[in-house]
Length: 121
Ligand SMILES: [Zn+2]
Image (cartoon, rainbow, N blue to C red; front, side, top):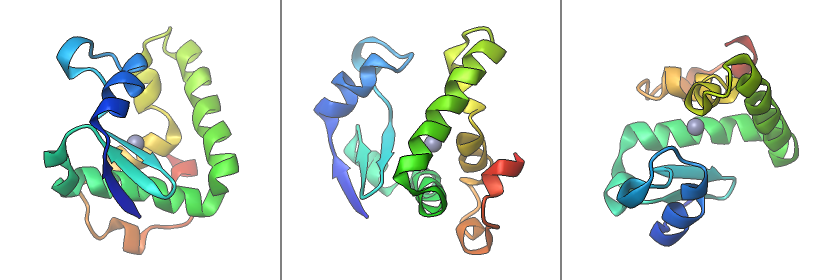
């Protein structure tokens, strides 16, 4: 797993999808199978954020990237309808995100995690 400071990409590409506009636009971090991209250098040592992204890595190990993406995006689209196009609520209720958010503060979670735990969120 390689941590990459990618300020331009995070601001300008993920910024197209983030609710923050202007100087704060773009996701804080993005998991991408072999890499984790960060908008700000200081976040590269944020253990909670790293734990969150590494929970996604555990999910990808179960699903493979080929299934992770359709499950993730499919769940997001369903949630958009479920939550009346509240994009933040739709995102936070993606089953794969729920597992990551609920356990990002637990630094032993990945070691003791049950396989496919996200399915039961
Ligand atoms: Zn996440």
